[in-house]
Image (cartoon, rainbow, N blue to C red; front, top):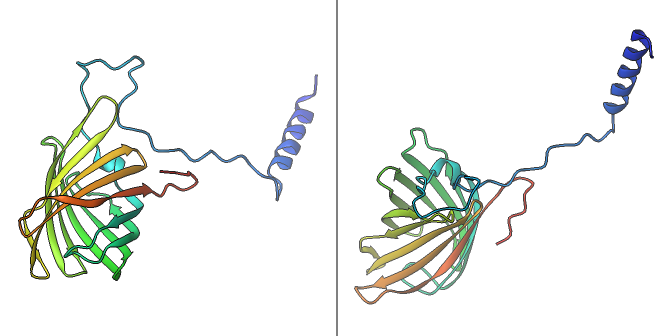
Length: 211
């Protein structure tokens, strides 16, 4: 048996060695965000309730995106790359975001005001784009028992450079750190055609998030 005093001295010597300068301490590994479907400890069943989409648990933060678009009244065709910062809401309904990006015609920004009504499963988003146009999107969010949520947006027709444009977009929230936007465009009342598919990837410190 080690006498009590000797035990205390040995303990302090060990702690001193662990905390000495230059000693690497093990840090908790960064955690990847989790999905929003609860783990019920069993396979899902058709009667299980799909939780309401939690905006505050998903969007707030910085996202990087890339989007290859065709030529249109909105700008030249080519690759658009940038970041979008979603700010946390203050009351669970009203949010903002800001895009800073560069496309074929140069740098631009877009500031958005967003309303999400969870109980009604309704989204709306008003964007002011520095390229010289404004647009309003409205839609609904749906989900499935696999943990995938989808937002279907549509804009009313709006004028850009003397032409009338309308957009339809499907935002697929494919994981806690990725979402995909599939877009179609109508010009001057014509048929809707492909306007490109974009990927948004969330910046999570210390966690690699490949597409």
